[in-house]
Length: 314
Image (cartoon, rainbow, N blue to C red; front, side, top):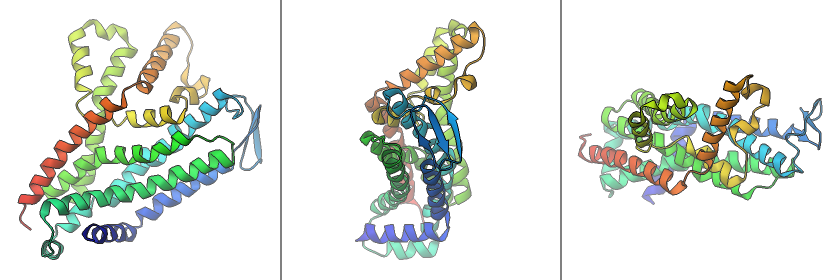
């Protein structure tokens, strides 16, 4: 009962901020845009047939076209809506949960009820994840239906994107919670969690830079140090690759038009080959190692936040 009461309060708070409806409206626009696209063997129609173009890359009747369609959904609208744009909006919607709860009047009401501080912290954190679960479920289920009913592409593994997207949010939100508990500032929680998100990707970007330009590997100690450091923070970049792998989709490079990602000359071809190898390696990454090490980092941050919350005077 205590959890459901906190959940209703959190959802009511997010609805008041209107961001829930903004993200939901963006989801509906994406779904409508996807539904307006039709695929035949040799052509793609847009805006319900108002415009057509000839291509065989996305023919849903072939395994390659089916893979490209699934990859396109994961790496384009999903990455946009529940990646940078969507996750920023959801962070804004949830960053105020803990500062609002820790206000003197609100905290007094909550702590007079028969609930311990660690349980109150855990319940409030779980409420935020439920909020994201609702948004992720709406996006994935509706786009899954469009792919199946409109395009004839049924990919049950795509539904596993729901827990993966919640997991992606939790990697960033744990920092938001820690900052909120320490500062009681919603703005600080948003800004520092976004900074943490960028820092998460830095070690992996360094490794990929080493691999794309072999001449940089002349210092093997530095390269190995970057590889080791890349396993410390949460692997936010792996999430979309796991979604692609389990749904049977292609990589991001498979989705992009050849003229966009390929240049001319031997150097461009070599860099393209290195980029494809990197993407294939990401697809083959062990989910147990990636998710396990990421959750270990998240758990340490949450333990720090919970300990601070438990000792904090309200």
